[in-house]
Image 1 (tube, each protein chain N blue to C red):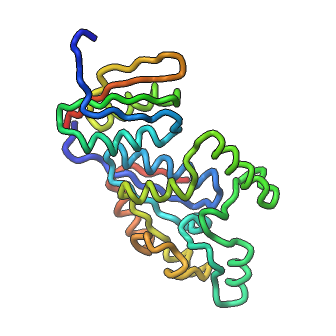
Image 2 (image 1 turned 45 degrees about the vertical axis):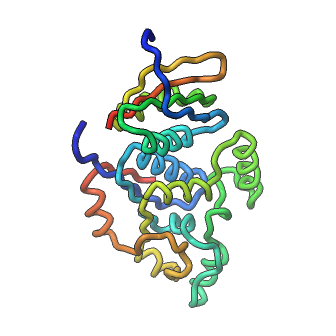
Image 3 (image 1 turned 30 degrees about the horizontal axis):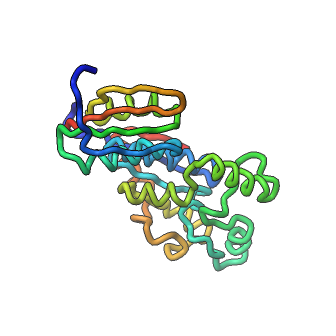
Length: 80
Length: 158
């Protein structure tokens, strides 16, 4: 990703299992402004499929998702 | 993106730990996706929203209340329960893995605005009264109320 994004919020979802990463992210996104970005880290491999599904369903944007070993980091932008 | 999201409703007619858990996991997720979510608890499903006290007034009702005592902490898995051992084991295994417990999931659902409805007819049959249910239950209703909600969106049956 070429642009350098500064997250409005950093969320630690490590150790949480389904459905909590999505539940916590949904709660957090309401606390940031529209257009703001949340950076989150998780260890549940289920988020690889679930966060894109959540983003698609809620209309928020999943900017990027990367995996390093067990830790998955992703950036979500609040759209509405 | 549509302006009004479809509603999500679920019928929980099982009082088994695994099935109730699936219900609350899907309900909390649907609510997290912005869906107006309702869970309708009927027959054995009532156990998941009971306080856990003994219920019933007639002989048969009291026997049922004794043998089928409700309370979210008391319900066991549909298989391999072994008179409560299975429940203990699953709770332990889930806790060790960091899975959210059933009481916490139910509270999360409530915090997210999931509406819990109880089936009037099942309560009448089993002798379960409103005061036997947790206070957070939104209403005690019949099938028509549920259908009215269910027809406005997607329905799941557990």
